[in-house]
Amino acid sequence: MADQKDSIGSKSRTSVLKYLRDIGDDQAVEELQSTGGSGQGITALWGSQVWGYTGMLCGFLPPEPGSKISTIESAMTLAPDESLKNSRVKVTLEKFWVHRYPGFGTHKILCEFTGKNQLQGEPEELRFALTTEAKDVASAAISGSPIFLGVSVGENGIAFEGKTINISSDVDDTILDAIGSGPFKEGLGLLTKAQPALKPFVSLTSSVVQSVLRRSKNKQVFNFKLGLDFAVSQTSVPLRIGSFVVVQGDASQWNWETVVWNPSSAQVVDKSTKEPIPFNYIVFRVSEYT
Image (cartoon, rainbow, N blue to C red):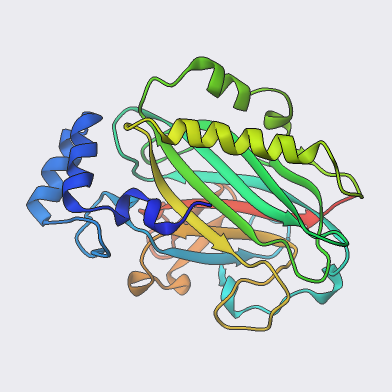
């Protein structure tokens, strides 16, 4: 299972600079050397290289249609929706904004999502991967891409986790082709009962991702874990119908009251300037499954 410590921002200064030189990102090397930025928990010196942050901030947008600027609430301040217990939900990827990623030009990014299908007996592990491309200060060409279709919530939520991998190596075409076709491309559709065929698919997805990560020029950039459960707490993210905005950043420099959602541009923007926020973020939506 991926962890925050596997992300490039948690690595040593020497490792980070070597990786950047290996992929030819001399601009990032120069900036980090001038600021003294490095990994190992030092977050104040990353400058514009926001891929170095290892923290996660999670906001929430309720499912309300309209064209007006919307307030984004901190997801950790909300109560869970108890009516979702023992129901089935759909999880879709709505937005992937890349403010800055290692390298230059168009970035090729592998995204992997995991969860739990809460059935009677042992929970089923879920795992789905997709590849996308984006330049700096731009969105990936994703909107409403299915991840999990028909997840059984049960009494304990769905324990959602995601990670992104920057692909700079010339990996085997067959590996990336596998992710871009068939069930990989269409989301993981789930039956109402345990699926004997699910375990091989989950194992294959894991093998593909691990194969990509074994290449030295491919690095995990971001990893986040969300409870999406029914616990009443100020420190976890509850399960609700709506959109979750997961920002790669540092909590010490963040305030949800200073940003809003602009539905016209489908972006998180600064409330005063209306400019896109200078952070990488992912938006995924939880909705009822029929």
